[in-house]
Every structure is written in structure tokens, then in C-alpha cells.
Amino acid sequence: MSLAPRPVLLVKSGGAAALPEWRASFAEFAPQLELEVHAWDDADVDPARVHYALVWQPEGGRLAGYPNLKAVISSAAGVDHILADPQLPNLPIVRMVTPETQQRMAEFTLMSSLMLLKDMPRIIAQQASCEWREFSTARTARETRVGVLGLGALGLAAARMHARIGFDTAGWARSPRSEPGLACHAGAAQLPDFLARTDILICLLPETDDTRHLINADLLRQLPRGAAVINVGRGSHVCLPDLLAALDQGHISGAVLDVFDEEPLPASAPVWRHPRILVTPHAGATPSRRERARQAAVAISALEGGLVPPHLYDRQRGY
Image 1 (spheres, rainbow, N blue to C red):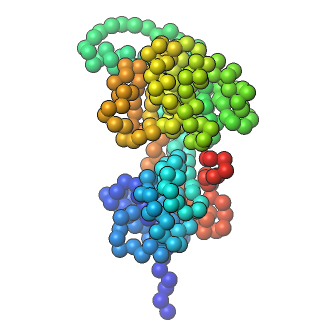
Image 2 (tube, helix red, strand yellow):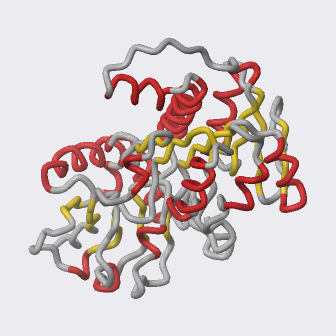
Image 3 (spheres, rainbow, N blue to C red):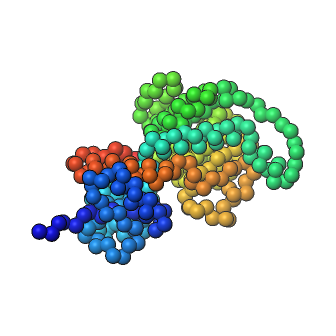
């Protein structure tokens, strides 16, 4: 009697060079699943055997070509790169949120806040022009009010780390939240008060119709003069012309931008050359391949057992 072929997991993240690491990690974390792990572009894979896909920016229409596909797992916390496919099958989509992701995002946002607090854009500009100009900054962390837009797993991790080192930290979410030691604001009615008390605004919202270009001229005007902006959510959250205008007018003092509508960011983008903006290459919270394999194995095990996997994307809520 011949044994049934093992189900296939296709991986589109890291290229062919990363395949041995993916295979070793899935063998470590999910030996019971007996998955065959193949590279996304492996032409020898029978499409009918593909049950799962772990992907980053899959080509439009490709996922629809696997008739027995059970679920799509994002290689990152966001799923907009999957939803952009007009032929996307109506299948479960799982977001990549792990303890390592939370730690990395908290560290990245804290680093960004401290860089803005210590006026790192000015320091970088002075080094580029070989200028030695001593200066002091106006506030310490304890005198600086941080506001986190979005209190999901990543937003809460960022808020907690900021609070631990002394920032006066608050958060805002669409629906009411309660977090010990954190002032939580909720809903459109409480957004103005949240913005008015925020010196450094950190955006960690999901991408929905309501959050597109939320950080626009109107919102920026509600921040105190001299406030700064950190966007590690989605590129669509920021209306870049409005942010550039607010920076040039001096109402916003600086920004760290890690995500953009178009990535890689074109060399012609004006944010590259703005003296008050630090551009980072979507580096906020990418976990190791081993950690992503561990989390994907948890999701696949849940799905194989008829259970709801953690961080399942909710199409109605948009995250």
C-alpha cells in the first residue's frame, strides 16, 4: 500500500538561499505535521498538493492556482501585501505576530523616540557637513508625552516599554481598552484629547478604510507645536505632502518613517532628503526565520486540528 503524499508548504520569503533554514525550523517545531517545505518558485511541486503558503508579496493570481490551499500565512504582521491580489481566494489569512515581533517593535519605537528626543536628525546633518555645533535638547523622557495610536499586540508592547523607561505614555484604540499604568483613549470622540497631550505620536494601527491617510493636515494640527511622528504601521496611514508641509512650517519637529506606500522607496521621494526625517527600510519588527517558522507551525497545527489559529485576520474588522 502506497502512502499518501505529504502536504506541501510553499515559502515565499528569503529566496532559495533561505530554504534550508526554513526546512530545519519546520522540522524542529512541527515534526508531527510532516510538511514538505518547498520554495515558492519550485516548478516540480504539484499545485494540488499545496495546502499552505507562507508569503511576502505574492504575485497576483498565484494563490488562486492551488486548488487545495487551506490557508495563507503572512511573513509579517501586515496582510495588505496579500489582500492586494484581486484573485485572492476566500481562505483564512494568518498574521505573523510573535513575542519576538513584539519585542523588536517595542525596541524600534523606543529607539526612534529617543532619537527624536535627542534630535538625532540634527546630529546626522552636522556629521554629514563636518560641523561641530554643541546643543542641548529641551526635555527628558520623563517630561515627554508619548501617544501610541493602536493598542494591538505591537502597540501595547511599544507603550509598555516607553512607560517603563519613564515616558508619560498613553494609547488610543478604536474600542475601549484597559491597561494597568496606561491612560487609554478610545473612539473618535476621545482622539482630540489624546492628540493634544502627545509630544511623540507613534502609529501602529492596522490598514483599514478608516485609517488611510489618518495622519493628515487636520490631525497634525491637533498635536502640540514641536511634536514628532513615528510611523511603523502602514505607509497608507500618512499623507506625506501634509507631513512635509507641517515639518516645513515648524509645527512638527521631526519624523521617523519606516513604512511607505511604495517599497522599496524610490530615490526620487522627497522624504529621503528632508533634514527632519529619518527614513528606515521597513526594519521595525521583522522576526527571525526560526521564530516565523515556529509561529507558522502553531497556526498550521491549529488549522489541522480544526481550531482557530492565533492572529487570524478578520476581514470585517480589517485586522
